[in-house]
Every structure is written in structure tokens, then in C-alpha cells.
Length: 100
Image (cartoon, rainbow, N blue to C red):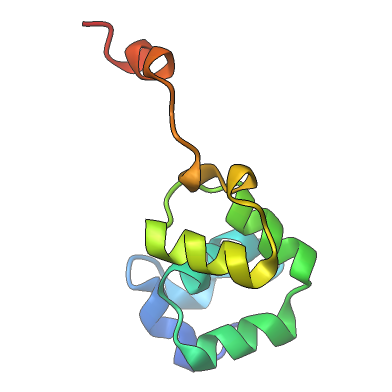
């Protein structure tokens, strides 16, 4: 795969679409499709990326919506405790950002 199919362009509204390299930017691509993808985009993702790559993208990113993260965790068999954006942050951790 040398470039992304044109039907994915709407998921990358904030960047130069032609500059996205599927091999170098796979995590970025997976994040967008996991959070916003429709059926066509999801089918493309499942056919072009390994399940382990998709699970890793789900587990290591905190920016998913709760609904998307929960859905994909169930579909991919990733326990809630392994999905970063579904973990509850401790009060102590929050104080490190705002010490008052």
C-alpha cells in the first residue's frame, strides 16, 4: 500500500492528505478510523492492518471518545484496564498537572 484510498480523505481534515504515508503514519491512521470511521473505512482498516497493530493503537492513545474506545475494546477483545482512555486517573496524578 503506497497511499491511502481517496475515500479516507475526510478523516484527515487537518493535514495534507497526500503527505500521509500508510507505513510511517499507521498509528495516526488507525486512531482516526477507530474514532471516526464508518463501515467502509473500518473494513479497509481490517483488511490492511494486523489485529495486533489495531489493538496497540487502541491501547496506547487517550484521545478516543469513551463510546469508541469501549466499542473497539469489546470488538477486539481488549480489556478495559488495557485501554488508556478508559482508565480512571487518580487524584494524585491530576494534582501533578494542577498543584492547587
